[in-house]
Amino acid sequence: MNYLLTRMRKLYRNSRISQKFFMAFSLTIAIPAVLVSFLFIRTQETQLYKDAMASGSSHVSRLNEQLRSRMDMIENASSTALTQKSFVDFIHSNMRSDGLRLVKFRQNQYEQMHNIIQSHEMISQLSFYVDNPNLHEIWPEIYHYDNFYPQDYWVTLRDEGGTAYRIFALQDGEHTLSYYRLVRLQGQQQKRPSIMEIRVEHSAFFRDMLEETGGNFFSVVMDGKDPARTVYNPQHEFTGNAGEELGNILGSIHRQLDVLEQGDPVKVKVGDHTYYALYKYIAPLDAYVVDIASHQALMKGPRNWYALVVAITLSVLLLIMLFVSHTTRRMFRRLESILVSMRKVRRGQLDAKIVTGLDDHESGDEIDEVAVSYNNMLDEIKRLMTQVVDKQLIAKNAQLHSLHSQINSHFLYNALESIRMQAEVQRQPAIADALVSLGSLLRYSMQWRSDTVALSEELANIQSYIQFINFMEGGSIELTADLPPEVLRYTIPKMCMQPIVENAVHHAAPRGGSVRIGISVSVEDDSRLLINIRDDGAGVEPQMLASLQAVLQGDSDTPIVASKNGLGLENVHKRLQLHYGKGCGLWIESVQGAYTCVTIRLPWENVNLGGW
Image 1 (tube, rainbow, N blue to C red):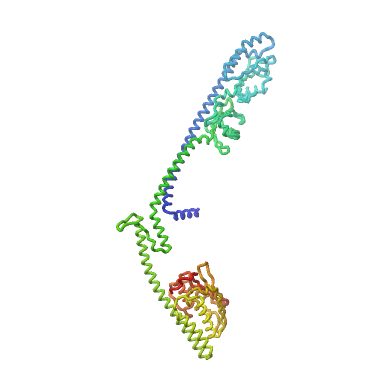
Image 2: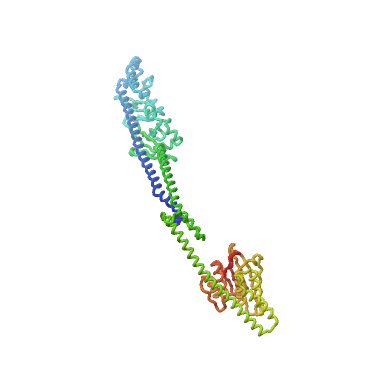
């Protein structure tokens, strides 16, 4: 988390001012506007949900009232039928004993009962099931009890108070609702009581519900015990949208129906869709009348309208943001010119002034004032830099001339003293060769036509020096320098290698002993020329090596302090850094008793190396 916050702070800090201004506008105006829009949409959806639930609850209540009203009609019809006592008595008597009596029954009691049935359009059939062996089953209203299924259903009726409804009739009841009623007669001798059944087709009893094919709510009557037994309109658009998931939807809703919580809507999720269900429990039917609505269907129309509102809002905000962005770009265009000028100055172009377009007496706005002050600052920087450069050149030239004099006089003194002692001791003709070598050395060191020479010239001088030293000290010093021809033409500072070789001669081998000195070159990162001068002598003591490395890592502007062994490495190192900077100079590596290697680091550009 801290890394993420740090990263965000860096991104914000490195962003342009116009981007920060644009971001501030987004945070203070655009984002709140979008949030308010979505909050408004959410509020409207909540209100829409409440309105839909209220409408669904009203619809369920209306269906409940309609079904109960029709149940009252059925019960009234059954009561009216039972008032025909003569009909009921006759079907419990011996109907086979007298044919004339049967004909009169058909013309009177039966016709009256038939008229009662016909007067109720909703009733499709009224039947009596009588436990009477002398019963004639010559009319559809009169059956022997043996034709009733199940035979012991009268016990259930008795336990339920003598009446009961079945949404799906016990006999051929797939699309029929039946009302059953026990018929009890005084002095009845039969083993089983008679049952009256009134049948009503679903299309008549649930007429209003089955005629609905559209709307937000889908009405279903569910059996209280069996979720698979339902009554609904298969032509309703909800069934087409639900498809094969209809059974899962109805099953999920049925599992959450509760007689004691009828006021609260049921919410179920099937697949990717959410459904709401409002319901009422009808106790006589032992069934629920349920209105089901899909959340997606309820919100479809408003969401399309809301999407249009959001699209318009976002379009207006986008136009405003584009206008603000364009305005800020115009405002900060002049500031951008200041930044461009600063970048040029950073690359060394001190003449990169800002064109303000102001007259002499115009002040301009705040950005113009910054530009004018910036131009004045550049003029002052150029003046001060000129002064500093002049002072540094004077100081460095004086220091360089001092260094030249110290090196030349030191070398000349030592050389002449050595020749004098050799001439006094040996008095041999070989001194002539030594003088030739000495002459070459003197001419090379005394003549400073230029501060740089070809590497081949420096190498020839070193070879003369080695010949002279071998003559003077009788040693066997071997110098090897196998260098590419293109490097021999490379210009290097004069007398930058000779002091290093001199140190190797005096400190690497014992007097009169032998030592091998090898010179090699390499290029580092295509930017540095490395000249390595390596000897296989005694090496440098660790303490002395640490002291030398500390000096070589020091500040090039510190004064040069000569040690008892002369100027040596420190002198050359100071010269290189005064001219080429901190990236150049000397570095020394050594292992006592094994080797010493001094590396000269120079720029890998064979131009403008003079000016010492």
